[in-house]
Image (cartoon, one colour):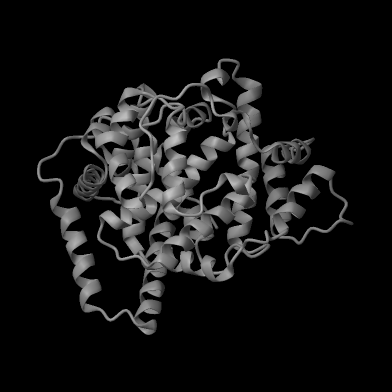
Length: 390
């Protein structure tokens, strides 16, 4: 195991994850490559080859958008791989629990702006510390597109798949997962075809199942742990609901269901095994982290220079509050004094508000409603600044 990653688990943010989750780890060296790094969504790739056959990108994307919004049946005149992919997605797994799914969605919404801080400044930023994971981003031009584009697309996806009944067949969240699955396969095929310098021995296949599981864990485990650090009180049902939600999202994206964690203990142990095949931040990692740190400066959301600088400062505060110092230093995160002031104020406010608020059914639903409103508004501001129409 990479020495920096080992430190992450021994006395960095990883040790906090272990303590919080109750995971049982053996901090030792691993040998060999996990076979899941060479496994990927073959069915999705086959479907993409058919969808793009004789079509340019715009035509192919329009087709997949239409298919994702339509009920597919055995008798439809479609290529076998395309039909099979959609029929598989339309088949709800036996383990799917609508009540748990709703509980997970409720937390995603009621966590409001705390959710967006946890996802951006903890989950996304910490992911840049794993050099091999970032390679698909680099080869598909993430640096050229800029951080605002990735923030916009990720936030839009997250909002759309975490609402009530969003993942019902042909509902908006389901459509987003179908389109994302196709983009994953398109990107993988593009890398395989155009980039002979892809280091398969170390990095595995582009956008492989093991890396997809790690990304899924970022949306569940790291998201929840970030909320915990920000002082949110989370029920056991909500917590399990978030893992259930992201297990289903992962299933729709083509990940084998038995690869996906069901609780924080399993997710932490699984993430630990995944990190054993990674190396810590390289120059690409630092460039990605620096781009994210400066996202507010480059973004069109804020017009005034002082607004851009203040928002950048706030995000640095939260990154340094949520991530351990060693990881921040590896990623080149700016050093600032008293970074803990704003995060601690938010944490104290969250704790105080939960103490004085009687979380009965009415207040709970109000919190869910208001969180949904705030999140949608912020997402729409990003889409507007990006010039994206929905």
